[in-house]
Amino acid sequence: MGVSLSVWLYSRSADSPPSSPSAFCSRAVPASSRLMVILNSSPVSPGDSRSHWSSENRSPHLPLSACKHEVTRSPVERSSDGVRAEKGVKSGLHVWEVVWSPDHRGSHAVVGISRQNCPLQASGYKVLVGGDSQSWGWELKTNQLWHDGQSLKLYPGKRRCCTETIEDYGSLTSPHILTDTKGAKTPLPIPERVLLVLDADAGTLGFVVDSSFLGVAFKDLPRGVELFPAVSSVRGGATIRLRYLNGATRDPPALMALCGLSIRQVLGQQRQNQTDKLPLPPFLQRYLVSSE
Image (tube, rainbow, N blue to C red; front, side):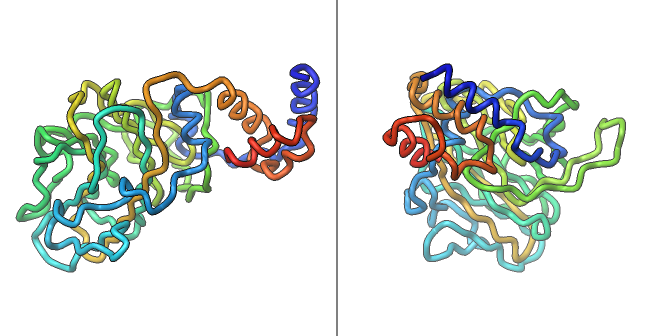
């Protein structure tokens, strides 16, 4: 059965239309099997408490929506304002989605993680998430990484070969591909949808943009302490949504999950609804559908 399925899949892979290239594809790095399984699994319910912004740990200039998934910055001047998630994690590999329109970011638009005591309001315009030793942030307009009040480096780094991309559960808004042939230090326009990838066991934070895992942005994060997704903004009217997608323990993924991932990757996004045509028992066909 395994041989016949492999032949069936690869004999049809040429029928899939080529996907559009992304500006981030050349900066993608291979993702771990744990991360690949998470991103190719159905997201948890939107009602999960890990999708909530905190009603207490936020700037007073960031009122919270009734569902707690969204904050909107008030039109105040000379203020930097932040918010962190209601619930953090101490272990495991976890992925959150942050949706933030590029048209409503302005300067000092930062997404990252923090410990419990990260400052969430300050006078003037500055980076809050990453502005102290308790937080780590990615400034979306300049692509700079921030920690302990210091700008560390650009993220993502230099162009790489496009070795692996991730087909996750939804589509992303693709940015315009840059015309800078040198690819040196020109900031990449970051689309509205960014995924935070926090490995609390390994002590690393990375990001997924346009279905491409851009690698580790921060390492040597504190372990065994609660870490929270966090954002900070200075733009009046900026609306920022949070959603927890999924997570995993430090154990290796199940073999069945890895096999399902491989099958869906070969099928491609265009043929995800054709699992009933696979030469598989109905039970396995239903498993592939339920895992999308």
